[in-house]
Image 1 (cartoon, helix red, strand yellow):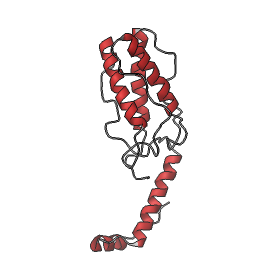
Image 2 (image 1 turned 180 degrees about the vertical axis):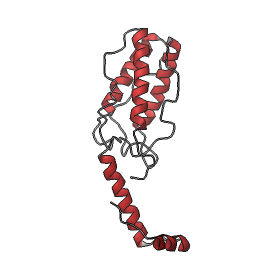
Image 3 (image 1 turned 90 degrees about the vertical axis):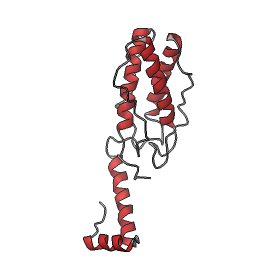
Image 4 (image 1 turned 90 degrees about the horizontal axis):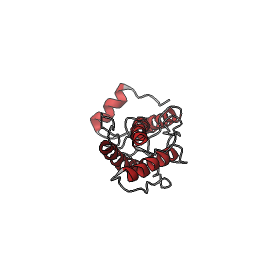
Length: 176
């Protein structure tokens, strides 16, 4: 665990405004502790990328709402795959799993998009070098959507699994 600092050390640093060698070492130790904790926990991301969660409270129930949700998820998942840096989710971008399907406009394009979102998202969960830990619990899985009923079921499942995966992050990007 990280070394401790006395109240006197902290006050001295605060009063002088100068980061002492001891404070720097303490911060490095704290960072290393967070990385080690993340490696042993159900944490997949180093930080939370702003706006990553699919915030709709309502589930898709019609073709129109399923297409709207699928298109929103497409934008968010594409952004999530490449979210890196101190405020991002990943140490490196997921350049392997790219969503090729265009935005959905009807049942046929909705089926194509939702099935690709599920497939590429599931592959992303264990993409080598992308996450602090592979995500073995939030796969969408299951059979491809083939009609309106299965489209609605699958897009709602993609949303649920995506939100669970994305939320499993350190609360701040302090581990870079």
